[in-house]
Amino acid sequence: MVEKTEKIWMDGKFVNFDEANVHLLTHTMHYGLGVFEGIRCYHCHDGRSAIFRLREHVDRLFNSAKIAFMEIPYSREEIAEACKETLRVNGLKEGYIRPLAWIGQGVMGLYPGDNPVRTAIIVWPWGAYLGEEGLQKGIRVKISSFTRGHVNSSMSKAKICGNYVNSVLAKREVIKMGYDEAILMDTEGYVSEGSGENIFIIKDGLLKTTPLTSILGGITRYAVMSIARDLGYDVAEERFTRDELYCTDEVFFTGTAAEITPVREVDDRIIGPGQRGPITKELQDAFFDVVKGKNTKYEGWLSYL
Ligand SMILES: *Cc1c(COP(=O)(O)O)cnc(C)c1O
Image (cartoon, rainbow, N blue to C red; front, side, top):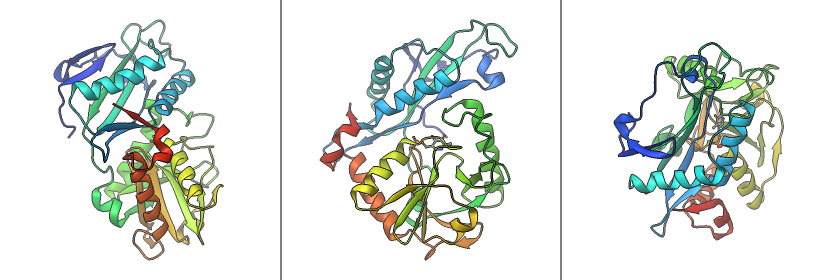
């Protein structure tokens, strides 16, 4: 369960956690057109707290809104500052930040008319999304029977609420079967991504990740691509198939929630040695150093509270 905090930022002011409610006629609740972000703040080695790539997340929120034809009634600076302030007000040194913009109450029917666009920022403590053990040992994944939406129907570049019906169905299906996470294929049958994570494979020291077609352009994905290249690895953005995935040396997921989570099994095929691979470990270590402010080269990626 999400741990209760003191306050939630709602339409420009702080309201008590239990009073952050909306009406049942909220348009987004019926039709799914709303946008959100997922951001993490880390407690750094020097005792300060830093939000990872805040600017990029806020930019993506506004791009999602643009794709969704929604006008967020705040500036990017106001939303970025409100993310920081919500952490401060709740006394959180580390945690997850969820900005959400939705279409409020007014008219019903598919055309949202002039219904107000409303905005909230919720924060809560959140550990490893796929489990601490998953981070260390790797997780078991299954390819879902659900396909990632076609690029001309789902608008996968946007974190649009309704898009996640596809992800939730995929995730529920594989969890019921005893796996930890789902992988979805694109409409042409190539590997797309996890339910809420991008995917990388490593074969003979070469990293590959799916290109920006059917996937959400993950900020963690970009960060890992840069870090890997700095460590001397080649990274290709190329489509790959499920059989290539089965026979690769290492597989891992990236995402703000999932961070870098190794995958040790896909569809009951053991990947590499069946545990976290050495390059995955190297990238995880480098990533956690970056987010916790231990690598000055990437200081520009951190917004200190
Ligand atoms: C948010 C998300 C990701 C990861 O993106 P990050 O910016 O790294 O958090 C990947 N895939 C999907 C479908 C997502 O919603």
